[in-house]
Image (cartoon, rainbow, N blue to C red; front, side, top):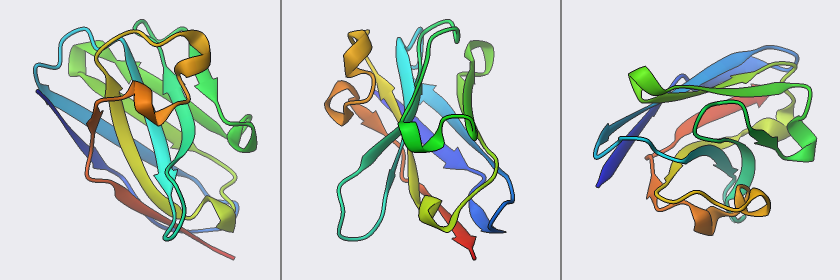
Length: 127
């Protein structure tokens, strides 16, 4: 089992920045893919960003490209999401996710590729 704990959410004004962190514990060795998803009440959980095993392969949903950056530190078993130029529509609960197997490139953005999820951290962007 892998446990994930997110931190770093909060309230920020539009145009501001926030950084999210996620630390893995348990059987958290060589996790092939880690990602961030977000969810607003009444809607499905949406893909935000993902990163491959060595940090070189990254994937983003179109709405955050150029504003968000995902990274990982395997030594610290951590994944990060730097969010710049935040917009009110970025408001959501952000979830960290870990995949036990390497997804196909097109599957990095699918929630079904990830077996392990954190509890989520709220990000609120005021206008």
